[in-house]
Image 1 (cartoon, rainbow, N blue to C red):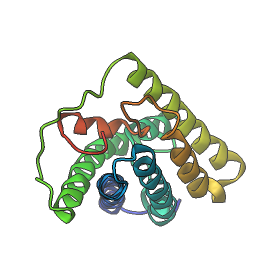
Image 2: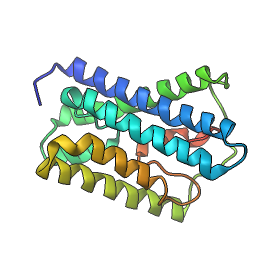
Image 3: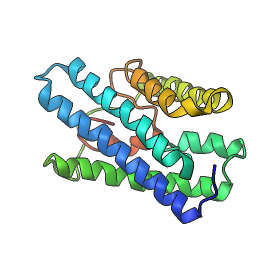
Image 4: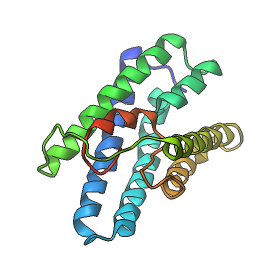
Length: 190
């Protein structure tokens, strides 16, 4: 990775996370509105939009920040000494801030209340296990493609997340721990 300033790397990570969350939540809202009550069609629209956005966002921001968009990825990269610990401590803060801004942007674009109170339960054993399995798969996908075929990482991650939406427990999953910030909100994506 080319050398970029800490500020530029943090801005790239935050902006990428914000755009990703705007797509996740925005496509979820759009899917619910257009699917006529068919949850499978709504989920399909959400997964395709999210996977496509990941391919683009990783391609755009990967060379600058690594395009983690996920504290679990950041932790693994720090443990592998591919990211300095000072950045590994700052990335999750930037990711959470970006996630909140992205969700607020999606809500604003769809005329939803910016802040919402959740009525959906997104916790429990099946949820935690689904997230662990999906996050393991995400990390394995990233590490394998980085080692054997680095140019394919954006596409591999986008396709993996598209598929991982469908292996989750019915309470919802995105293999993105920072999305748990949203567990107090009533909206499409947790």
